[in-house]
Length: 294
Image (tube, rainbow, N blue to C red; front, side):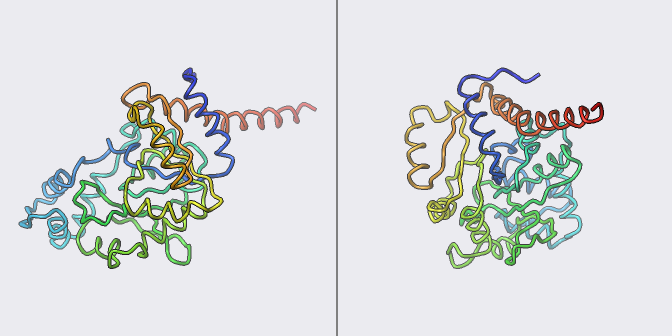
C-alpha cells in the first residue's frame, strides 16, 4: 500500500509525474547510494590492501592504488568488484525506486555500480547506461571514489567497459587536460546538459566544473529539475532556488525527507511509479481482457 504523502511531497510527486513524460535522464549522486560503499579513500585502500595481501609503501592514496594495481592487476580488479558489488537487499530503498522509473539513461559522476545492480534487480536487464567519473580537478583528495561504466565514445556510441578510475595513470588520462573543461569527461557532460531533460537526485552541483558546464547549457531548451531535502537547507531555501534558477535554469523541488533515510522521497517515487508505470499497465491489461469477452 502506498504511503500517504505530505502536502509538499504530493506536490513534488505531481510535478515529477508530469516531468517523466519528457523521458528525462536521471543524474544520480552519492546522496542516493553513498551508504553502499567505503566512506573514504583511506578505508578503500586499506580494504584493497587486505584483500590482496599487499601493503603499499606510497604515502598518497592515488599512488598507493597504483602500486596495488601494478603488483597484480587481476587481483586488484577482482578485489574492487567484490568491494563494490552489493546484493539487492543491501541497496538503498530510494535507489531501488529510482531505477524502477523509465528514465532515458542513468548518469553519475561518482562510483555507482549500485545503479546497475538496482536496475538489474528491478528489470532483469540493465539499461543503456552512460556513466563517467567525477569531474573535480582536485587530485582525488576529497574522499570520492570514481568510476566509469559504459563510457561515451566521441561518436556517441557506448563503449562496453567496466573499470575504475582510481589509480594515478587512469586519473590523469580521464581528468587532466591542462586544467581546461575540454577533456573527455567535460565534453560528455556538456553534451548531456545541453541536449537532455535531467532530474538531479542526491547531488549538490557544488563542483566548479559542473557549475561551469551548467551555466553553458542554461540557454538550452532542455528542462532540468533538482531534488533537495527540505530542512537540510533551513533558511537558505530561497537562496538556493534563486541561484539555480538564475544561473543554471534549474527548477528546485524541496521534499519532506520525513526520516533520516529519506523515506519521504522513497514514497514520492513510489507514487510516481504507480502513476506512470503500474496504472497504465493495469489499464492496458483491462482493455485486453475486455477485448476477449466482446
